[in-house]
View 1: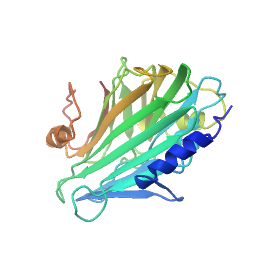
View 2: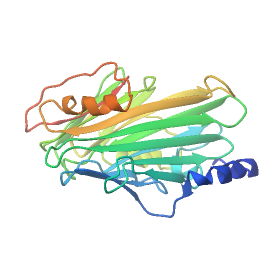
View 3: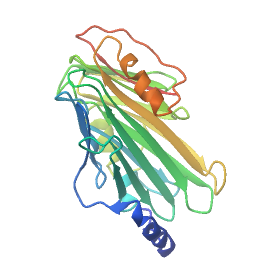
View 4: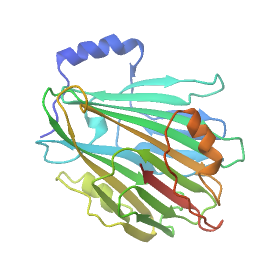
Length: 293
């Protein structure tokens, strides 16, 4: 059963927060910084898309689905409520670099914070830092299944991409025939399930109106590939354990060492990267790498 809408008490709370957040009309938010822009549609499952770095589009779609106890299917997080958003210009140049997006009802609150950090023009470097908060509002212990779906499309439709997820579900590596490297590091408990597939397979199951779990297949390609991770969580009614925080950083750089040019930028945001898995590649085989810490 789909989660009901938020009650009057939460509506009153959101009114009090109106000075910081605003309701978002249909359409995409655009973050811009130096050599980079990224679009985010908080009103649909299009989610984060069209990440442009020095004219190269490196992301087709990355978004989140969930279900709670009693649900009979997965839902895109934008179905929880209308989004509240707040755009921030942190460096006083043209464009906003940061946005907060909040969805809330009487069952749970999910808030995402994005911070775009572009590189110097022509450097082919960029990063998007993210923090995702999932909070139990139900007043009882709440089982939550949370999905992240990723479609890095910089190989182009029908490209020769390949993706492999590590058996411990703490990393994913994608090779593509374009001279950029994209990596993602996530500080969170290890995922419960993972799935690598050709484009369309996983997304169709997240949207098919049935309960689905990721199938554990850890490799896909060559072709236009995607991957997804699933966390099975139980949030306490209140106090410690009633909220989980997921911190992630997506990075773009030139090969052969994609993460090195951006480490200082990430450190400035206070994200703790306790380890980094390095992979050396040629200019013909850059990587997409996701590591769950």
